[in-house]
Amino acid sequence: MNAAVQQHANRRTAIRLGLVAAAMFSFGYVLTPFYDVLCRAIGLDRARPEFATAIPTALRLEFDTNVAAGLPVTIEAIDRVVAAKAGGLVKARFRIANTGDTPLTIRAIPSFAPVRAAGLLQKLECFCFDALKLAAHETRDVTVVLLVAKELPEELGAATLSYTLQPA
Image (cartoon, rainbow, N blue to C red):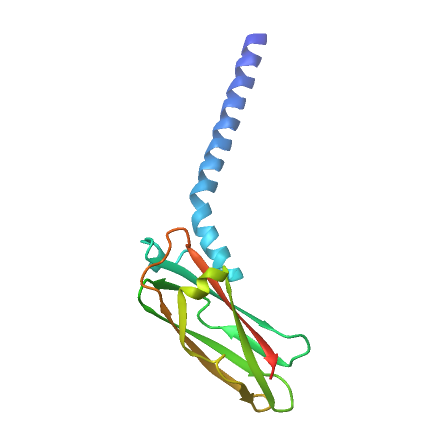
């Protein structure tokens, strides 16, 4: 009788372990679509197709935006991440809005990270060249056009171009 009880307990343990293994397999199978949905829901940038074949002649260029404290303005990078190919042109769009009740004159101050990326990206057209005058509650789309150096260092996989809005 004791052997029969032991055999029943072993069978029950084997079934439970089989169910746990099936649940773990199912979780792994469902994880990829769940991750895609989660990333879209919280706005994270997944791998972009143009970076799938990234070679040393491509650079991931990210745009960051900031506003000086107390300035009633917002700035948003419409094109947050772009692929910059060696010797090519990059165009990125931004949306600037005056959220205040009075007209403003502002200036965008650019900065690069890492700093050596500044020597690889030449601004041909930029909203940072001149001061911007915005009427009360005006929203404006602006652009920056960059010329990428013909040769990019292999170890530089990504660069960030940041704009900070300051009063002019």
